[in-house]
Amino acid sequence: MTLFHLALALGVVLLLSLVAASRSVERFVGWRYLFRRRSSRPVLLITIALGVLGLLFPAAFLFGHFAAGGFLQAGLAALSALTLMLFTTFLFLNFFSVFTTISITGVFCGVATLVVVLSVTSGFQGAFRSKVLGVNAHILVMKYGIDFSEYRDVMKKAQSLPAVEAAAPFVFHEMMVARGPAISGVIVKGILPGESERVLNIGQMLEGSIQALAEDRPAKDGSLPLPGILLGKELAKKLKAHVGDSVRIIAPLAELDPSLWTAEDRTPKTRDFRVAGVFYSGFDEYDRRLVLLHLKEGQRFIEGRDVVTGVELKTRDVEHSDRVAARLDAVLNPDDGHGGPYRVIDWRELNHNLFTALQLQKIVLVIVLTLIVLVAAFGIVATLTMLVIDKTREIAVLKSLGMRQGGVARVFQAAGLTIGALGTLAGIAIGLCICGLVSRFQYRLDPRVYLIDRLPVTVHLTEILLTALITLFICLLATIYPALRAARLKPVEGLSYE
Image 1 (spheres, rainbow, N blue to C red):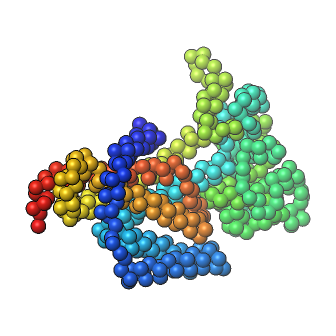
Image 2: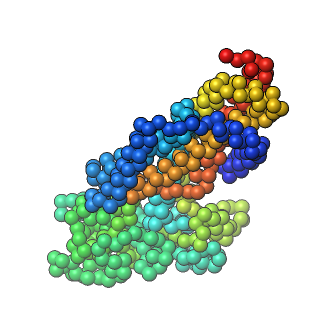
Image 3: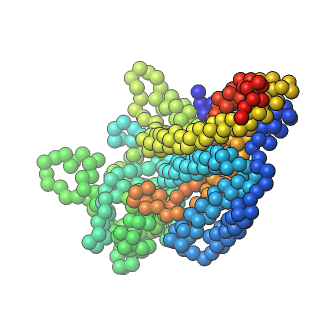
């Protein structure tokens, strides 16, 4: 069963339960049991004070001139979230009893936590996906072996499919780059300016441009004209290289040259390039290790002939790239019983481990944090049980006046669902406010650990609705025992209750 079907089933159950508790008298009695007669003055004063602070802290946070990620700004963000939750608690305390307020607080704390965690994990998934699909294509076509010289025919066949938007060849090898004493292992990728931009989104160009790859210009040191190369931001910082500087690419093995398998002594292949630009992808792995150069220079230096590593494709709908990959595989590899020479990989298969780990992490976090809502549900059970004990005489009077057992049960169902609904609405509101604060704060991350430099937050309406439905369903289950206990109470026992 998918999450959509689960949400639909829970929604139907919730709707039926609400219809069952829809009589105005039962709903009115249930709601009235929860309200307190009047608020105490200290609680009202604390609520007003928290409300004022709740306005001052976000105002100072949102409109203050603080460095992004600064300690003072982080403190204001935390105080804003804490003040908001305390204000909500004391606001409910003005209208409801202490036990009811505690139950509502437990629900909205669980819901708010789930909303924030779901939004952050969805933000991580979205950020990784956008960064990965920025530098990598939706579909890769590679050939078993090293002689991929017919790539132009493969591109024509791929572009004949309506779902394929663009195609471009590339070469791809692990090498080293050096400038002075600094040296670093890199991945060198040869692209075709003018074509590859239609397939890839490399990111923000901090210096230079992609088009400069097609130009041979002298470096700053006055050397002969050199072909251009693009470096990632962190790699350029490590090499202390800027546009116009020269760097040296080293191919330690140059494994594609068959002559290297002879017994003769060979030295690594090297060539100087001119830095034509510095890019920032936002994905630390690419900013530290990726080097881009012109396809013809990559073929000349790496391959030595007109062959490529593969062809990368961009589809019109990234969600259906697996279907397009299957169709393209059928076109390139006819089923003749011997298999085909080409391997077609979509972005999900290429990054399967990364996205599977993120999805598993999200599911585990949701399961663990749902325990908060379950604990809050026990609070609802305790509150309604105490309410049944406290309202024993009133229940007996209602049954003496002709209310059936089902009607008495619906009274307490209405009370429990009111607690759940108020807690859910407050939790969603608080969770969205915290997500807004986190998004505005732009909390910094260590890119060497998390691969991205900012904490991403992405709110999905379907996840919010699913959280609300699951919470209300748990709250509905929590009302069953107190409602049955109230329904089974005999009028004689209730009227004689001391």
